[in-house]
Length: 312
Image (cartoon, rainbow, N blue to C red; front, side, top):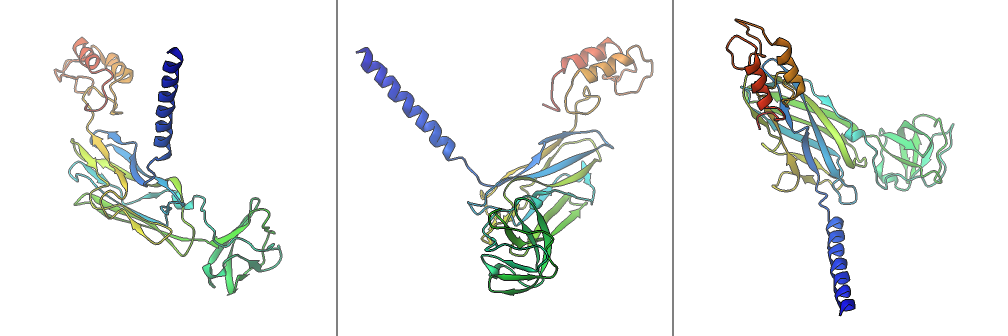
């Protein structure tokens, strides 16, 4: 009887483990666009930075990124934005794909590069030729079948054994359009030419925001649409549910959060403690209850909020 019971327990454990592994194997790899970090705090006159990232771009699932665009909206009475966008490095990430694998050694001092599929190239393309040791950019002067004749002699020798490859270097054209009155920005980058797309996770851009007035607002990247163009030339993201989008939030910090870093902590308590016995008529932020004095009452008010994050 005991043996039978142990057998049933073993079978049950095996079933549970198999369900766990099935779960792990079916992880959702839909690309997502996210604001990081999600929450920001600040006082009037301050600035903060919003980073936009993409996650789970996957070459095998045809969600590798050739072009992306993000729309974000916020309350223009609370925040304004700098017109300058700091562009990320995602489309400069390593690319994958079968484009232009070398069919023979490409020797230094000559202009000839033979690739597996010359149809992917045309005269005038800037081409990146690489192997595990070296890489260099050159320009295609002419194409004959699978043979590329480059504009300039190669500096290095590239071999099949070294997993050599050649593909068109994309022309990346960042764009950004800001509407200060409505509180929105359209930002994106397009890769022109048949270059393999970028995959994985990466930084897309950074925006600079100015705090104009007290208040709160969502930094909403789901306002209009967010999309990417994949290796099949398909646009993803216009339809609901195609891409995951995680917005951010600007939160007015509590009065007890004197340094507006989003948390009431030892730094805020110390700020009040250093000003104790100030008054009468003191007008600094350390006077939490605005009675003109900094005293044990203000210390108590900060202590009661200790450990609280932003307005939550």
